[in-house]
Length: 216
Ligand code: AMP
Image 1 (cartoon, rainbow, N blue to C red):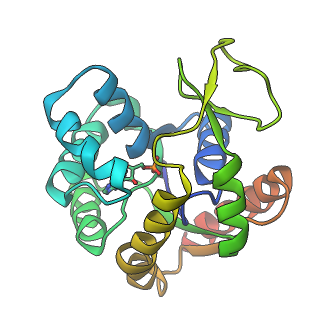
Image 2: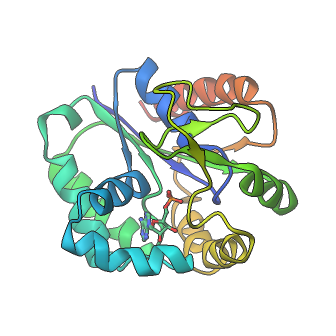
């Protein structure tokens, strides 16, 4: 049966890293809406270029655009085994649309994980975060170049301090209500994201397996 996971949490919680690892280990499709947008901007896609101004201000891209991107991605054959969503849904309207898509798809449980990290720690992490300017992979702050392709490391255009504070504010206002939308479900779980990444990974494995079996 397909396994579908939503990795929720504020910017800097480590959800991208954990979503990537979990998806790889379980051979699931990782869908990061932020990565899809950044990729489309590089390819000069018109819709994405229009979204870029909002991203650079730390604001959300409109629901219709984001729902269309995810709906299209989920119809592809490589999503049939299941998926890990990173960065979607970010609004209650997106969460509702995802429920409708899941109902039409009729596949596997939807496990929702909230990765919790205190705000001061998020600000510290985002200030130091670097990505590869060539392939976009997250990098170790101490690294001199990208471990994957050797590319030069850069700061994400929306990781500057002022924009980070705006992204955290947007998270509080628009995305926190999504947690309330999901909280009462038997497949909702919370993980302490302030731990070292391997501890977070271990806890995630346990609680996702638990949520999947608890539902059966
Ligand atoms: P991320 O890499 O997930 O932090 O996303 C970077 C930026 O892309 C966000 O700050 C938003 O501007 C935009 N974005 C990504 N996913 C969504 C979404 N589900 N809804 C609205 N905007 C999004």
